[in-house]
Image (cartoon, rainbow, N blue to C red):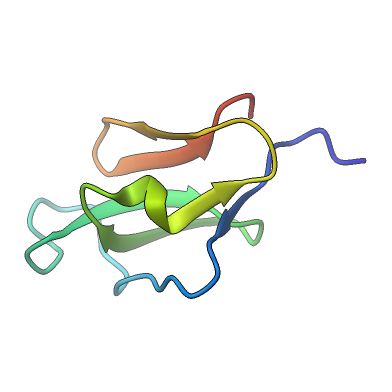
Length: 77
């Protein structure tokens, strides 16, 4: 069994457009975030501040690290 905690997108949720990590690269109400859904790191605009409402973790809890861009990961990973 994979010991790495897996982050996944909740059913029915959608991600915004890719972003470059520059300030204000996303439309209003979205934040630039980096995360890994299993296929390698992605940098996308996500709904803010309800970022963890978009994702679920196979174990642990969704964490948002206040860096730039924001990092979304699961606790324990």
